[in-house]
Amino acid sequence: MSPIGMEGPALFIGTDTVYVALVRPRLDPADPGVREAAADAGVSPEEFAGPGNVWALMLDENGEGDGFELPGARDTEADDFAEQLQRALAAAEPFTAEAGNFLRLDARPSGDAWLISAHVTPTEGHDAGPRTLDLGTLSTAELLADLEDFRSTLV
Image (cartoon, rainbow, N blue to C red; front, side, top):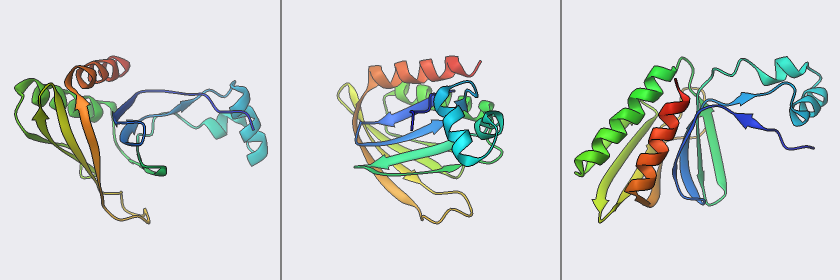
């Protein structure tokens, strides 16, 4: 099957092997991979692509990926979370940042980087229970750049 191209706002926090990602995927019904997947599923490409306005939290820890939708989440809430992170990083003090009741980040400075742990609580109806992921030591400059890029995609 062809790979499916995905667009939409995405904030990845972590490394290649362990991360959390706040995403609002948007599939293009004209994408060949979407058309093929829709045909395989027996639905129209437009139906397969969906409305593109549903936020999700994705996570991965050493190849053990998971994720869940965040019904009712809005762009303003994602922007508020990103702004909260920017302010906390600028203060250069240990902090906790929360995105609803599904994601909490605990962070403490380490030189020009941050040691960050993510506490994930899946939404109701998801089979998995709460998880804690050690996201590692992440560069302050890269985190701030990623947050700025993310926020610019929300306008």
